Length: 308
Image (tube, rainbow, N blue to C red; front, side):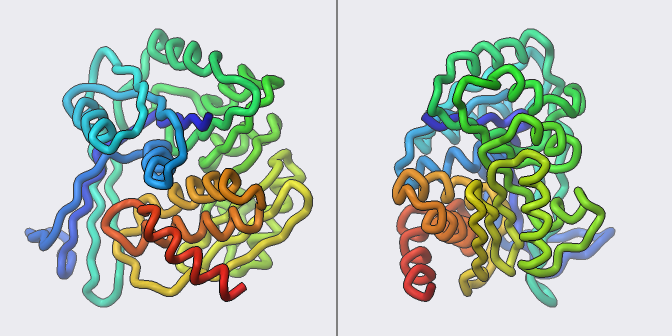
């Protein structure tokens, strides 16, 4: 079974404007409101691809109820813990195509997580079994320490659970000693970790293998419109340019890549094909107002796999 944990879910409100005017009134020409948060995005795309999974994490208040309702409507199995106070956050994404595609994001901090609620999550995670996969994705509320992911990995260490960490900064650094199955930084996060600029596949692979030396079993690096690279557990080095298409909404594209990669491993039992399937899922989400559908992923995968 695949489990995802989202500590800080959100109602993602994406609006499209002709030209973004700072300090003035902007009228949206289009809006799209969805349940969001990196782990939730992974669960939704896995669900779209027919892969059974369970979404865990924390919700709060009326916005939390809206998130749960959205996931229930999509048929995503979710077992969130409702916090005793506060509201799940609302994140605003402003998309403008005037003078070229651009996205401006305003992300709220989210509610505090109390100790009793955190213990409930730990109790859920203690039921995981050998062979399960656990996706820890996204930011954590300011009420939790930077060791939050590492604490979970320490608790589950030695149980045979493959852990995927999609995080940055201290959250990411803290998990490496527990040898995560996969980590997925983007090229900016990867560069910030080492104080370098990642502007090529070669540089991305160099730093990805440095992360492997620090403990990661495999590393998947998303590079936006340039594509992605993969440093595998057995020394594999994969690169792929991004499929051609018009970016519509890149929110959730990296999370979709994680979901596609995991689905590809189940579907093909081949890391290279899983890598291409991950890129296909990430691109399908970027080319759509919504997260990737199975039909979109299969179409893109068919195109890029034929050209390899």
